[in-house]
Amino acid sequence: MRQPLDRRNTTALGRWWWTIDRPAFIAMMALISIGFFLVMAASPPVAHRIGLPDFYFVSRHQIFLGISTVLMVLISMLDAPKVRRLAMLGFAVSVVLLLLLPLIGYANKGAIRWVHIAGMSIQPSEFMKPCFAVVLAAIFSARFTQPDFPSYRIAIVSYLFICALLIIQPDFGMTVTVTSMFGIQFFLAGMPFLWVMGMIVMGIGGVFAAYHALPHVAARIDRFLDPESGDNYQVEQSLHAFKEGGLFGRGPGEGIIKQHIPDSHTDFIFSVAGEEFGMIFCLLIIFLFAFIVVRGFAKLAQETDMFRLIAVGGILTQFGIQAIVNMGVAVNLLPAKGMTLPFLSYGGSSLVAMAGGMGMMLALTRKQYGKPRAGRALGNKRYGGA
Image 1 (spheres, rainbow, N blue to C red):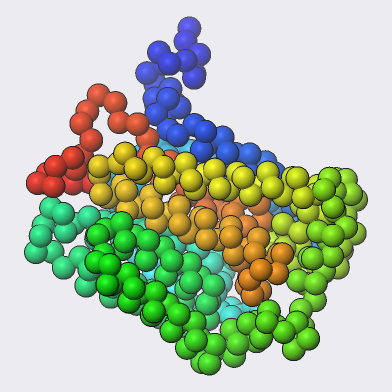
Image 2: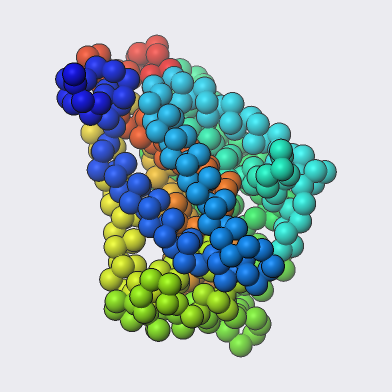
């Protein structure tokens, strides 16, 4: 009897294991495991402070982890056409929910980003993000098989439409993430150099416009540049946590600062890792994130299918940007922004959506044995595997 992960196993599970990017998958599972222990360490004080059972967030996080892991594996088994169809369906549903947010959403911390569905709080923009990356890849790659197809115009209009929906909430951090993703995908699709310079100038102009037009953005930037200008409590406590942790940390469960950080289990979970496990452990976390992103982009160097290349590039960009922003805020290198750390922070929508996105990435980077890769020639009709 052949073992499930034997190379000679031709079942769906066997083919999946020997065709996915195993090192990247193992790195993701390592992050998921680390996240479980960090949520277990960080969330009881938060739950106790707001009058919930101490392990309320831990038990919910276990459920989210199970759903996310199964979802990531199932999606990673799909082929490119099915990934594209799934992304288009997810994007359509997410856009509808974003349009309905002003009517059915509820406010939290001054923003309307969540909606209650079946007793759960869902943030539609989290699910929109990876789906939008794949949809943009389909739009951009179409120009290689249909020279007259207005890929650039459709992509730009779609991007502006999504940004408008995000700014209405408002969610400036998500807008920056989507903008970075769009810029990288546009570049991979062959954007002219002058357009690259123009997008950089427009990005800088967008930051200035947001500073003057959105009071909450201005307040966060002002607090970052001048900590004395406003409430900077969580960032100060986060820095104190890293100082207390030193190289090797105070030990699992021995952290003190987490009891004083309201968002220690979500936006500032990296500081909990710093206090309890130390700088060496934090460097390991950074290495895992960097490994996934760098390995993914290195694999794209041999990719000839433009749909896969652009889609994976977009998903990896949003994954890396989100990690950089969260960790940068925790060590006061970036202005405060409510953004979770992928796979580590507590949060149903962000965890499940990130797992879905990385599942798409694993599916699109699987080895293609036994058949030629779609899109090797620009004249292929079924370009991008669709």
